Each structure stands twice: as C-alpha cells, then as structure tokens.
Length: 362
Image 1: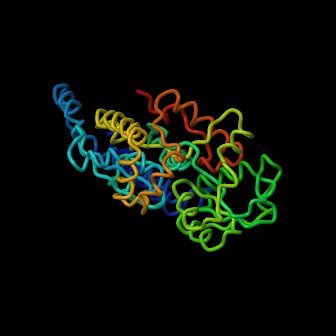
Image 2 (image 1 turned 30 degrees about the vertical axis):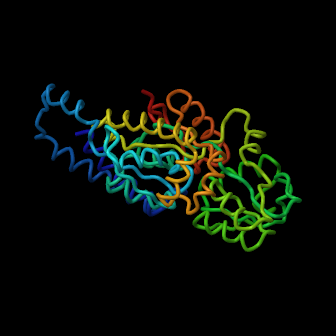
C-alpha cells in the first residue's frame, strides 16, 4: 500500500512542479496538497484487500529484477557523454541489465516523463534533484554524482579576468533558476556584486548562447562544456576568460561545485534494487571508458547527437569533468554544494535541505 500511495503522491506532486517551476509555493501547489489528500484517502480504501506476497515470490522477484528494463533519461551535454558507452552497450545487448535511453535538451523536458513513470532513472542538475525530493516528499533518491564543474565564461573580451570585470556587461546564460544561474549568483555575491551591477539575459538552450557568441566575439556567455568548445570552434576570437569552478572554490571552502547528479524514482528502487545496482556498476564502467578511449567516446557522442561534431567532442571531453561518484563521497560533495545554494537562496534547493534518506548508499 505504501508503494502505491507514494507513487500517487509522486505523480501529483511532480505535476505541480512541472506547472509551477522550481520557484516558491503558489496557488497551484495548494491544489496539489488537496489532490494528494484525496488520493491518499482513496488509496487506503482500495488497498484494504491487497493480497499477501509470499517470501518465495519476493525472493524470486528480487533475483529477476536485474533484467527489468530500466528507462533512463539524460540531458544533452556532459551527463549524456558519461553514458555514451553504456548506451552503445545496451543497443547491442551487451549488458546484463536492459536499458532504454531518452535524451532531452532541458531538465524540464524530462519532468513529464518522470511524472508518467516513463523514466526510472534520470541525470539532472544537482539543485533540481533537491527540488524534486522536497516537492515529492522524498519520492526520489540520488544515486551518484555524474558531473562536477563544467561551467566557463566565454568571450573575445580579454579584459575580463574575474567576476569584478563583469560589472556593466551583459552575460548570456541558460535558464533562470538552473545550475548556471545559481552558481553565477553565488560567485557574484561572494565578490560584492549583485544582479543590478550587470545584465543577465537568459536563453533556453546552450546552443543559443553559443550562436550569439559565434556572431559577436565581444559578447559574454556562460556555457558548459562541450558547448564552450563548440562556440570557440566557430569564432577564433573567443576563448575561456573565466573558469567558474576555480571561482567557486575560491569563495566556497567547504563544498565542491556539482553540476549533475543521477536520481531514481523510489518506487522503482524499492521494486527493483538489483536493477539500480546494475545501473551504478554500468555507469561507472561507462565513465571509465570515456577516459580510456576518448576517440571512441567522441565518435559515440557524435553518433548519439550529443555533440554534432566528433572533433569538437574529442577536444571538449577532457574539460567536461565527467565522473561517477557514489556512496559517502557523493553525499559529502553534494550536501556541501546544496548547503551553499541553500544559504544563498533556500528556494534554489526546494526550500529545505534534503534529509539523510535522500542519499542512496549501497
């Protein structure tokens, strides 16, 4: 009964998230609370006749769940590069666990798929994982960190050497309320700047920022890899003028810059624990292969449409900071990062820091 109830609450709560975004509470969220209460009452009545599952049936299900098809959602960019080998192995049935991959360009495009249960495991921005956890009352868990700092300030304006040099300029970046936005605000505030000191112009995708930089080398853009390499390849006047990981480390001594994490729906985790363990092992192996065979990684990255140009991918991969950090190391790095965001703006992580159960440790 608890699993079914949690599933209902997850679907309803995440629907509200998709409608209201990652900001503060709204009237729609009040409606969600009423719907959750109604679904809870109805589910209690419906579950009174649930049949008992024998111990033998439970053990058999656990043994077989590593062949359950896991639906995996990734974002176009570094997180998808880290799963490139795994995607290729799955296509050729070279993994014990079956996978189906879906790639989207923005995190909000993955949300409806998670809501409908069409995605079991998703690679999303770190703060989005925390927001989802709070909105769904613990309906998801984070299972690994897949990407560390990959953000760079790009421009042909060589006078920019630090945050103070951004005063009076226009900075192009993706999505308000997303990782690049919060990281930039953190660094600006730590250096005595506010949004009133510069102009932030938001675009929906990194490719839009890269296109602006390609046309105007005096423009300033905040981009993740591999889009930094894409932009620089189209305009020789462009270069990296600021590494935001270095800037973050300079002002946040007790945390690491975490760009992306991998989350799992807790209903899927409860029902198929071995499938999740298999994914973690396969993901780690895929990340290792990205560095062991960068040429093949670049080829796969182009084949899957993560980056259009194989040569660009080959140049970008070493700067993409792709990882598969699990266990206590994951918890320490991620909790420190979320605490830094929370201190800056509680809404950036969903209003509250996640509890211990947020971190899946085998």
